[in-house]
Length: 419
View 1 (cartoon, rainbow, N blue to C red):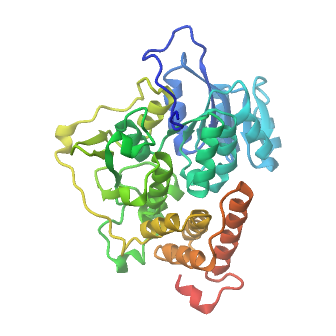
View 2: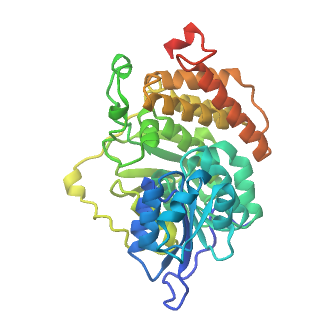
View 3: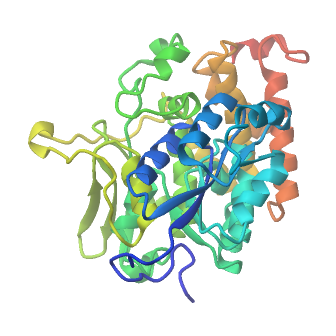
């Protein structure tokens, strides 16, 4: 059976007469969106923006539309559509759409070749899955889609003939280190382990006592990567690595025991693949998301991403250490949720989104994040994840439970204040 993660390789050079690749960008105003547009702008003869979407950053979306002149601009918050329409009065070639219907339209349109799925969190699941159902080339930067609905999602990729290319730097590195036609066949490819790297975040050397007092601004100051606030907090708690562990299992058809997390503070080796003969292949590069984005946009070709060459002499050395799950229990919680199966990963993700938002708003301490997630997981029996409706029902219930457990919320007990 043909591999469902990527199609067979084609010619190594682009036909100069070929039409430009039409790209819909979900989450255009975020960090991945910004990097994607930077790569696209470097290759105007190869890529054309078909649609740009955002949730609420109307002014920034309008600015991007005037620069890239897409056929459609979608604001997922329908209440903001009139404002976007007003801002785009001078751009008649761009039609304004809104809400989930608008997102659905721009990911399934026949003219669209590629969809960059960069909406953060559970909100990105439905439009990303719609793009898969449309048989598109999907560049997956929204790891939550696979965390929440891994089996359902990968079945849809196969059944609808979609192409799935990973954008997370770690998964893209693994993708590059695996044989092109055996991406989901670890045993057949002779792979013994996937070595998933993690920066360790900004608090790698802090004690538990110090972690109790960290602030949102400290958590968002990642030492290597420029990311949004939510993913920066996930990196600081190691939940990001837990979500990536789940994503890697689905992407590469791997078991958790075949994946080992290595803390690599330099963030230069983005991940490695170990083979039966003792070989270990690693993908190296500067910590710049334009590299995996360019890799996926042009695959199987290589194009300029605007990233500076790696200076190994300046780096000098690489360091590795095992993750400390005592200080950072989110990694273990994610592994346990994947092992439980069903809707447990969706519950994990939903509780984490609420916990991180509460931390960023000053309602919850940093070490309260894993405690809240563990409590919600313990309260919710695992359900079947056979349908999108069942997954979203459990997602909503987990959010409601997590909100009810926050300190000061109605229904919270005095004991919950320790979260």
